[in-house]
Structure formats: C-alpha cells, structure tokens
Amino acid sequence: MRVDVTPLKVSRDYRLLTYSSVISGFGSFLTYVAVPFQIKDLTGSALAVGLLGATELVPLVVCGLWGGALADAMDRRKLVVSTEAASAVLSVLLLVNALLPHPMLWPIYVLTAAFAAVNGLQRPSREAIVPRVVPPDLILSAGALQWMLGSFTQIAGPALGGVLVATTGPTVAYVADAATFLASCVFLIRLRPSPQSADAEGASLRGIAAGWKYARSRQELIGTYVVDIAAMTFAMPTALFPFLADRLHASWSLGLLYAAPAVGSALVSVSSGWTRRVHRHGLAVIWAAGAWGAAIALVAATLNVGVVLACLAAAGAADAVSGVFRMSIWNQTIPDALRGRLAGIEMLSFSTGPILGQVRAGSMAAWRGPVFSVGFGGLACVGAVLGLAAFLPGFRRYDVRSDTHAEAVREERMAAHAAASL
Image 1 (tube, rainbow, N blue to C red):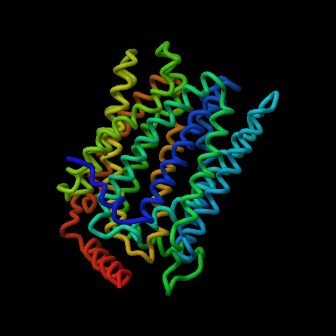
Image 2 (image 1 turned 45 degrees about the vertical axis):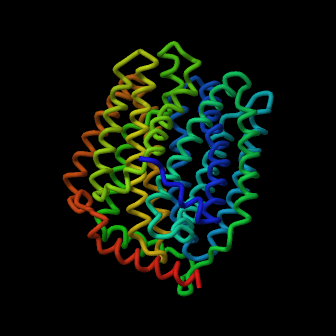
Image 3 (image 1 turned 60 degrees about the vertical axis):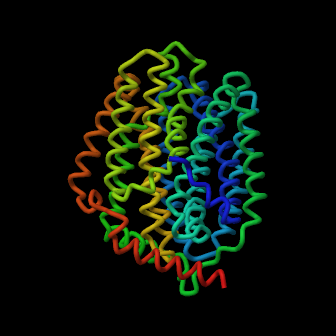
C-alpha cells in the first residue's frame, strides 16, 4: 500500500522537477483562492466568478496545442524555464492591480487569461520531460508520486490562501505566488537540457494535426480525455465555494472547502502502492469518474459543514484514482516523438473540463441557485460517464499487460535508458 518514492531516489532531474512543481504549485493555489475571492468582493456575482473560466478557455486551447508542438520541436527545459519566469511577472501585475485604491475587474480577467496561455505553453514540455528522466518500470510510481505531492500543495495552498484572503485580502497571496515562481526557476535552471529528437520537425499546424490524428486512432486515449472532460464540466463546483460557505453560515470554511478534495486525493496517493496491481486502467478511470460525480451530488444534499467536507474529500480521492491511471496510460503508451503534442492534448482535457465547469456552475447558479447547480452537475456527471463507457469499449478493455502500444513504448524507453547509461 505504501507510496513508492524510488523515482525521487534514482533520478536527479525528476527530483528537480518535483521540487519545482511543489513550490510553484503551492503559490499558484494561493492565487487560485485569491482571484475568485477578489472578484466576489468586487461584484458579489456568482456569474462574474464563473466567467473566469470563459476568459481562460481560448488561450488555454490555443497555447496548449502550440505548446505541445513546441515541446516536440525544441529544448523542453528552455521552454519550461522561460514560461515559469513569465508567470512570476503576471503575479506581480495582479499585485499591482490589487494595490490600487480601487482595483479594477478587467485586468483580473486579462491576467487570468494570460496565466492560462503561459500554462498552456509550459505544461506539455513539463509533462513530456518526465518519461525521459524516469526509468520505464517506474512510470506508474512517478505518476502516483506526482499526484501525492500535488495533493499536499492543494491542501496547504488553499487552506493558507483562505486564511490570507479573509484576513489581509488578496495582496499577500499575490506576493507569495510571485516569490514561489522565482524559487521554482532556481530548480528548473539546473535541469539537464532536454532537446528535441534528431528527426524532429519544427512546430507547425501540420505537426499538431498529426498529433490529433494519432490520438483519434486510439480509443483508450480518447477515453481518458472525454471521460475527464465530462466529469469536470458537469461536476466541478469550485466557482461556487464562496457561495457555499455563505450558505453553510461558515465563512471560515472557505479554505477548507478548497482543500478538502486534496485531502482525499492525498489519502489515496500515500497508499498508492496498490495501483501497481491494477492492470485494467481504463475501467479504473471509469469507476473513479463516476464516484467523483456521485460524491459531488451529495454535497448539495446537506447543510452540515462536516458532511460537505467529507463528500468533497471522497470526490478528491476518486479524482486521484482517475488521475493516476490516466497518467499511466499516457506515459506508458505514447512514443517520445509525439509525447509533447499528446501532452498538449492531455492538458486540454484536464484543464478545459474545470474551466467549462466553472462557467456551467456559475451560470446555473445564477439561474437556479448554487445548491441546484451542484446537485444537478453531480448527477449529470454520473450519467455522462456511464454513457461514454458504453460507447468506448476499447477504453473499458484496455489492459497494460497486453496492449501493443505499451509494449512498443516500453522497449523504446529501455533502449534509450540503456544507451544513456553507456
């Protein structure tokens, strides 16, 4: 049951990536709480908070796809470092706006969109470096470890962010976020170069199209994308947390509402040793996504703070299971020459869902109230996941022990690691 920390022991570059992710992720979750809090404070509107997702969607889609193409065409390390520095600048600009005598709403939307664009450019390269620096037999362990450490940042970041914004407003959160991005750069600069392959083409629309064509040819990949998008679009309630805290008459619980899913995720991740014994990864993702929706639906059925937090923790546990096995399918079956472009598609799948979910949750809450929005979304998630599972038999039946793509990639990476050790 114990989490396998071997990837941290055997790979220097994986350690540097992990330290960087934990530090910058912690700061980003401070801003994740501060931005919706500031918009709610300026407008009092659930719709205005939900529209954050609409501002992020287009830059994330465009830059995510282009970032994937760049990841296969240039040194991935250089791209990661430059975009991390750009994120620090954006945090400073959020701080400048917050320090104005009368902070303006439109710069928050613009800077949020810019953050989405920078994240879209960076994430595919960051994800595509991992299979290069971790031995093939430790890919699943590395994925579980990433999820566990990410869960802890999701616990500590929102919990502290909730306290900070409630006591000092958003300014301290923005200062801390900028500082964590700069600290993260110190680790990223020390990474070894991660250049493109010898036969790599330049970033182009044709290359992006080739990545899409490859993804469409494999039902197990399509399943990882669409199931997660459906789950997050229908059952991502974070835009409504400030309003749920008011409904529960517990404004002090805001940070806990943000942190509760990560608590459940962490509990699964620290006991992730069992994941090595699961081979039907597609089926595991289906069950986990359905459990996420059911837990979110239960949030709408109670006025008890403790029960709400327990339901959110259960949802986070289910999301961790889904995330670990989706990541394993990606890292175990996609060849390195396409890893960046497919990482761009992956990023869109796990990022656009929450963005669309914010828009859906905020719009439906403005129409029928936050309780209806949360409850309807959870039930709709369960129905959508069951429908997609029926429609994608190749995804349901995926087994890492017998999949031809997994075997080919395993052989490719074993040869690459053997050559690197000479």
